[in-house]
Image (cartoon, rainbow, N blue to C red):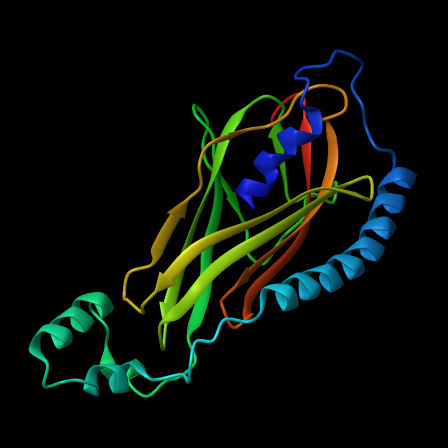
Length: 233
């Protein structure tokens, strides 16, 4: 999400542009939402085509953590390596599970000199129909925490697609990695980005974020709108 929103700076490569404050009226907002709905269907088809071209990775049969530890148990060095990799896993709760489970616990936007913007999950839109507002030309980064349980999740990643006025302006795919179950949540902090500024950058954006793994299992899909304005909301 943060990476995609940061990439919005591509929509205003020439930097700051002067001009009057630009607002989408209600008719424009509805047109944008209708256009987005049409484009999202095409976008999902493109995603499937891209995945088919790349080919689904051959990960082999799923194996429970208990079976992972039972394999090569007579090899002391390999057993220690597996235990170190798995960390403090409670085998009583995950030992026989084949399916991994990932839960996104929190999402927040961090900007220097300001209190963090904690984004509610599930999404709660404000009275203007947007999830949050960013100030133009401001530095920020996304921070989120997630938990992994039951089994190892391989190739966890998130994708984010952004539209403005019904036109796709950015698409980002970010690989997070492979994670084993643990009691403490994982915390990810994206690189710092700067919001674009100027007349053409300000306005309302629509976006869709997904968290998936190598098996294309989707753990969370978020559809939302956000604003870039002259000032913080």
